[in-house]
Length: 186
Image 1 (cartoon, rainbow, N blue to C red):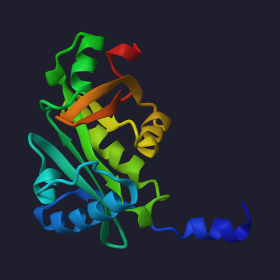
Image 2 (cartoon, rainbow, N blue to C red; image 1 turned 180 degrees about the vertical axis):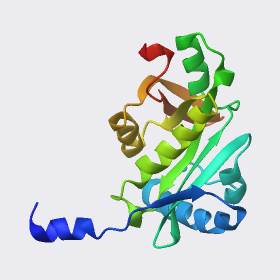
Image 3 (cartoon, one colour; image 1 turned 90 degrees about the horizontal axis):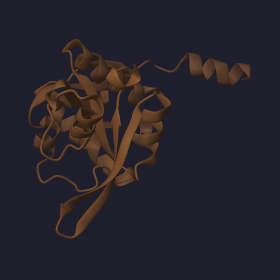
Image 4 (cartoon, one colour; image 1 turned 90 degrees about the vertical axis):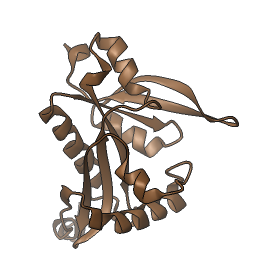
């Protein structure tokens, strides 16, 4: 690394992670739209993206900020009907799927990548799940190779890859992950 590169890295602003408020939803939807255009996430654009971000069975939501502007988001929720990882974790560990928390709605603005924001958001959701005595799990579309690489780099364990029917005409491959540090790791 040369002095110029080192100096640029030293002046990069650190992301701030804080609880999401209702006042953040519009900015988060705008960031999500940028992510959808760039990466195709979410695969199917929600009819009401603000409600999609709020999610059902929400345990918490957080935003990442750079220079005072939201540039990323993550949520933590109880498992729902479409979540595969909680059942796989339960089968593997012999624990109730009610002892899991689902990490979801994780995204970072394309312009803000390279600051460790995705890892910081994932860490915050994981920390909250553990604080509640729950094991963090998640599902990710297999075609989202950047997200899968992040989870694996951070030590998340791939439980399985499963075909999931999202509509009568749409079947999607989904990777299911569990955070490191649970009964299966002992």
